[in-house]
Length: 138
Ligand SMILES: [Zn+2]
Image 1 (cartoon, rainbow, N blue to C red):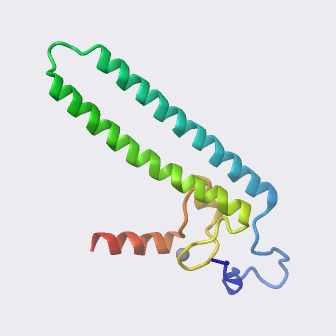
Image 2 (spheres, helix red, strand yellow):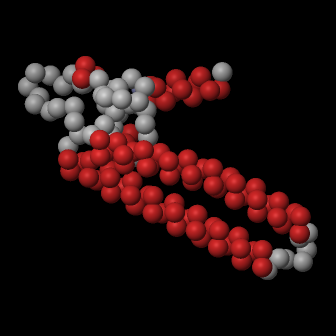
Image 3 (spheres, protein in one colour):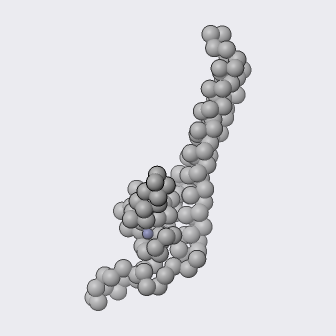
């Protein structure tokens, strides 16, 4: 999907700023996303290692079933959360390459840099995110 040309924010006639993000700013986001991706992958690896260690050294007071159940539940919870974030990061990096990074998927408006700095893998502006979340809970 191509970003809507009309979605360019009004910055006044004196401003020469285009809707495209500053290259230096974009590079900073790219770096942030890549670092976060490495962090998650490491976390997943550490977690898997910890789990296999736990399996080898079962505390005797915990039954085998209880232990396995606990491990399965926590692994699943971590997996889902981390994998979702990994997917969002991959998509954001793809968008940087395509030049559509920082544009809301729902309304095609620019997502404010402040929001991207806090959540670099976000794909919606605050207004759309709020609407999506409201729709989900309704
Ligand atoms: Zn939006």
